[in-house]
Image (cartoon, rainbow, N blue to C red):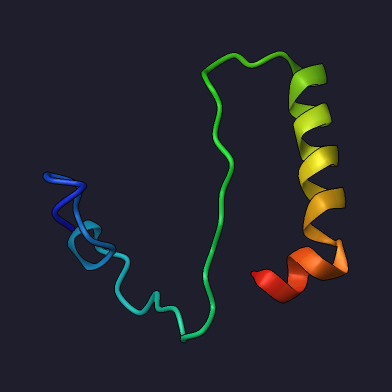
Length: 60
């Protein structure tokens, strides 16, 4: 990707066979190193609740 120069592809890091099948998309949530566990738990709870909302599921 032009927006991620120097970032290797999945195949380039030897994860052959790992594929996505359209229309599936994967999402992740990242934070800084040593994020306090209560903050991780709060973010996880919010992400879990929001991603289960029917209107969000439909849009994603």
